[in-house]
Length: 164
Image (cartoon, rainbow, N blue to C red; front, side):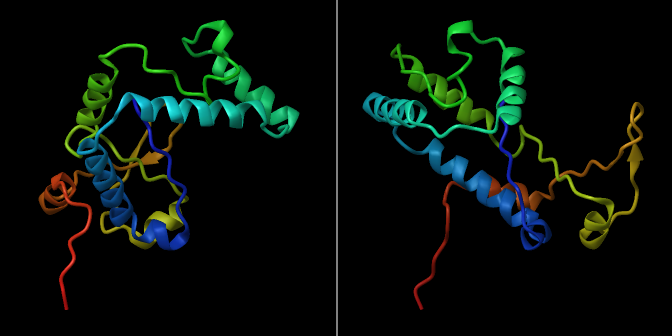
């Protein structure tokens, strides 16, 4: 599973479709990019330096994040840095694995969750039919993207500009 978390302002929430479209377009741009092995090595070096000289965190926040990481399938020697420092590409198949991951990040294969208070959803909603989740009673609604959105998100170009 791969997850993007985007915190929206009030204006961003009202334009969530544009934000989702920009995200899909960005992934499309990544899909068309080259991923040389030296580039990953540079990212790892920068991340290691940032990790080595990171500022101290709030102890409570750090303890909570550490306990969450302990539940992940990560070797014990990497638990402290696995969030901050990416791995070196140790095989020739690493670029192919990245490409496979990006192929899975398509509008037709993913899901977008728009979370907010009831009042926020009521401002932008055209459909008032909400269902209730069985365990906690949380309201939710499932909608499919319209075909024009899927087509736009599937196109490879990031922006289209016209000369004036």
